[in-house]
Length: 228
Image (cartoon, rainbow, N blue to C red):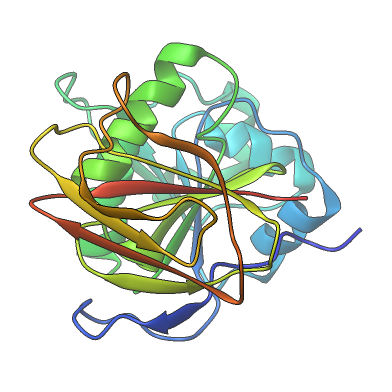
């Protein structure tokens, strides 16, 4: 089984430091089923990070993370010993999630260009909603993406054009009613309209060609591509 096809940028002139290379991987302590494609992403990543108990999922693959970040209350004792204390980065702050702490480490301390996050979708609903909120807060286009065996999700506050396949299902929404979004390259295009979740998001839209164009103003829009 092949891994999920990546979001491919056609044009995004203003995102800082976005480069075309394999992304670093961050594994959260969520509901993660290791498909062949997801396992390949982790094994081929130039840098592998874990948010606390995400290290347990990596241990099941035999992959030692380069760093484990968080309050470290979910990592198994055996996993912690196997990974090594030198790779533990204790962040006890309870005002932020381990996902947020790991993002700070990835884009700050490690200075990564692109990050793919596994274990952020599915599982507990409250965790999934929280993770999508963090994604929107840290919107970096294809520089930060949540991936599962079923979907790829990113958030962008800047105009972006992404490769697509005709007939693919795409959804778009915002958390801020002040954001306006224009969508092109989809069956139901949108022009400068709010797509607030719970009001009028664009759910189960459909790509009509080789590119989907997303143009938000006033803040980030979340973009979800379903994988067939």
